[in-house]
Image 1 (cartoon, rainbow over the protein chains, first blue to last red):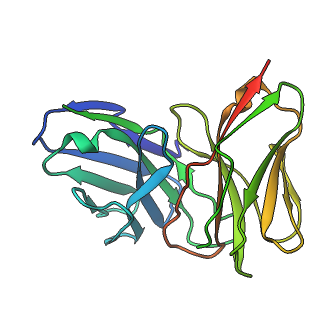
Image 2 (cartoon, rainbow over the protein chains, first blue to last red):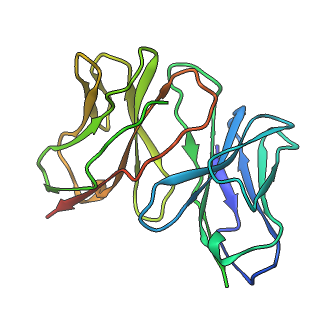
Length: 114
Length: 111
């Protein structure tokens, strides 16, 4: 199993450009999450999904859109990138419930907006 | 979910036990204590979790006080590879809802 993978690993954008970050998991997990992490700070939740075709807002959703068309994929979109969106983005997934309710994280995508 | 408080940073000598504290005074009866860590530039990694009994696995031990208002993560023999930011999170075990990570504790293991 590859676990949680993220594409791309690095990206540089100019202000106003758009892009999509892809998260894929092969563990058949129902729940998926997108976080961002800025220097010296913990992770902040952007959007999450509790199943195929459903999404919900997290702490910092403004400027981002998401889609969960397939259970294994969770896409994060930036329609018009801004320098404030320079960050490291992490995707995570987990099973709905149970004793071992841990989240599995991807390796991250480092995004710079100039 | 209940809020947690952790010291911003700690040092530990290599080979000694690292004891990382976490306060969660507003924890409710059905909330679990989870610990994750994040080694520089990598995604967070699950370590351990518990409800009210002490727990141990191959990575660490979790000690939860009897009133459940605080807990301690113990790395029994810290190595340089344990240098990381450690996050204490309190949440319902069956919750599908969002998980909030605070700033955590930055642990430095010193040779």
